[in-house]
Image (cartoon, rainbow, N blue to C red):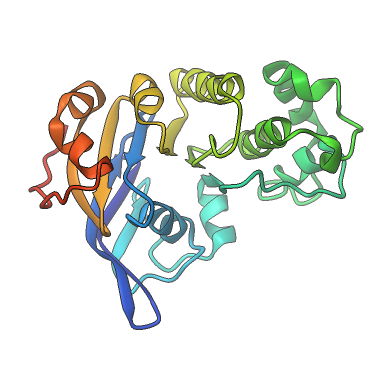
Length: 244
């Protein structure tokens, strides 16, 4: 087991938004998290990454307890989250953005990591000296993913990478994620495009109001009517979690 989230509770002020949620990701596994807006998907990812405090529960990663880790400690342990919304440094070049992605392991940056990334993302190689602000939205999202990959994490969290992007760019990002997973990198994807996400994933979780409403292998989750009821506005009762 690579990531083991146990009985996680998260609150904003007095309002608890995640209620005893548990989930797991195995090494080299592609896991997708689905759910409507407000289901707690991004909040759970932020809690795993150390970006928001936990009211209760544990986050174990590779046997290490990261329940109280800072974001930097989480990255150093091998978890990298690509945040929603094309989060790159607009006033820096493509190459400088990539070098920042190496700082967790080599504070001065590691230029030896650049060429493998450019080979993986040739659309960035042609723009390496271009300011990030001059990239299209799709190019910025690809840069954000590349910035996460260059840090050589053990788990890459992609938080709704499809937001506002053309279908061809979404397919490109998901294809890259699948290839990285085949090479041994664990992927945890938060996504609203259900069919595309399940097509790439091994396993999936369905969140509803800060709880796990269902979990199953990806092909099984896509066939159930619970998923459709939740996305159409129905209310599902959380089920007892079962391991794959």
